[in-house]
Amino acid sequence: MSVCDKPIAICGAESTLGKEVVKKLRASSVEIRTITNIDLRIPPPVLAKKLSSTKAVINLYGEPYVAKWKGRYEFDIYKSRLEALRAIGVALRYCEEQPEVFLTLSNAMVYDQFEVHDEYSIDYGDSFMTEVGRMETDEAIKIERQSFSGRIAIARSGYIMSHEGGAYPLLSKLARIGWGGRVDDGYQCLPMIHADDAVNAIFYIVNNPEAKGIFNLTIPNMASMNEMIDAFESVLGKNQHRMPKFLIKFLAGRALCLLQQNCKAIPRRLTEAGFVFKFKSVSEIVANLHSGIVPLTDAPED
Image (tube, rainbow, N blue to C red):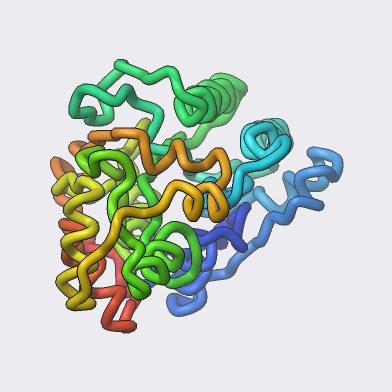
């Protein structure tokens, strides 16, 4: 099925998830209006022409979390997301015909590290990821209050597991040489979602006129780092050694905090709405990606 019959504007098409979304749109013959970082700096009335008369504006823009954090990189992560949200928010006011929905990506690690969190949780953490996630939520709420007539959706995503980038290629390479073992005790939960499910969830939200507010984009069956290691050992038939601290620091710098942070987020709203996950567990995700066959299927029927 076609995901929609009107154009879709996407900001952050070069991100890991953005590449997967673009694949889906092209396969469905949907008109794509790409919003680049240059577009975010043009006068708002000009940007508004790209956003006007679209089915949805999907914002996936921002410096990637899975990278080597050094220098002012945390500032770059925060600033890139804030500037994109504010530029789009102002431009939406100038649209002759506003989009039906504005969906923006956020992170599932906004919550504290102790409880199990669904979308109704207000128990936030005190980490950098929390700071970014709360800013994104606040800016989205501002857009809703500033004369935007459409729906606002905030997708709080775990790690996007894909061959296109993000955490999986790095973890897979380490696992193949036997260094994909635990960080710390390995009991910390790592929020994640297969790229196929993330894309289908986004278009499920876009096409559902009742869908608005916060949605957790994470697998239904929470997984610890130890469970992820077990999944790699199963497909590779190779025991994994503990990740050496010097190797992690060389690869990730201060981003080591991501692998150390515990996050128990569940997709309650998607599950209750009847969304069907293709990959519900980390073992299913790793087995599928290891096979090298990652088809993007049609989104589930509304």
